[in-house]
Image 1: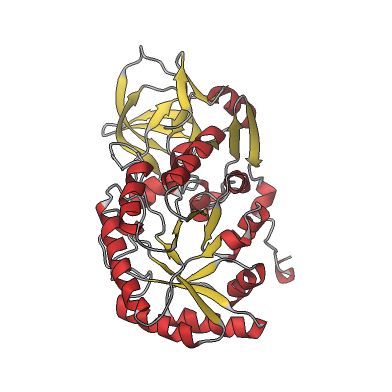
Image 2: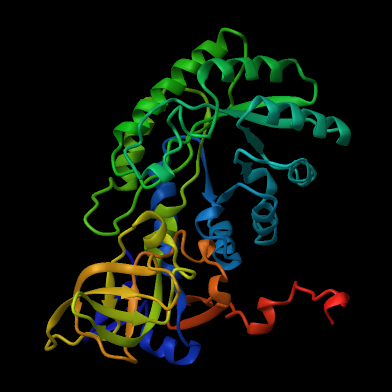
Length: 419
């Protein structure tokens, strides 16, 4: 459920007409709902109330400081994958002891920053990373808390670009190499084994891959126990999907029931890293129609947002529902491509989509863009990135300003020999 609803033919974000926000802010812009963000977090968190657990929001899904601060106030930790995300999480007030550091390519600098901050643990993904982390910890006179990310070789049944739990993926370690990593970590005085980590993919719409992966993790934990390696934290990652179109992902309560049943006899704290399921349906991208164009082969609705603003359709061929912000039930239905101004054929939000005939100047809402929307945006074609707006009840707040042309070139310099 989300708080973007039609009232008398007008799309509202909580208590505000989207059309009015667009009039004041300009288009395109991202719009997030505070009520939806809170509701999704609370439902997810409460679903695991029967177990000791920590929700570490996956920052990569939407890293706006206001969103992070909102989750921090709800008690969330953070799953981070870079030094920049660590900086954001700390700046938003997320306690370092609730932060886990994932990702296959942590640099020594990022390791130093995280060790100095005092994060909960590093999810280590290779033997080389484990050795580097030990060296960095030794240089600082610290002990690095670690979990090893295992690759359970489970098919998550999702888009191949967001599958992370198969042996052919770059993430984690196969079970034999992971076992070797645990033995090495146990013997190193600058490493402390705290947990085990497993994440199989994103936008999963079935429970069975989660359960299968968890059972393989449990079997591996028994093997570790035989070596007197104690696991205090079991990090199962995130990946629960949302509805973009006709998907039918399980609700968090059903997902939690399946995991709780498998975990009831283990004495561990469960770590969960939800991202998309918390923020995906809590955001929309609002764009204005520039032109309507017909060719002998196609109809096109050309809008002022582009693939630089929302990459998912071009990158994943992802489906997003698109609705007029003001409905016109008397208008005919057309079949058209909804496209942006970028000089790429791949610059589209929908292809051969049925929608009411819309006219230049009217607004469209691209739904379910709260996750992997702004965070994947760019300045391609030298386009300033759009603002982000947060609605709370009958108020709205610009939580990131629209970029200016001057900001586009702020870090650039023409060398003297060209002047």
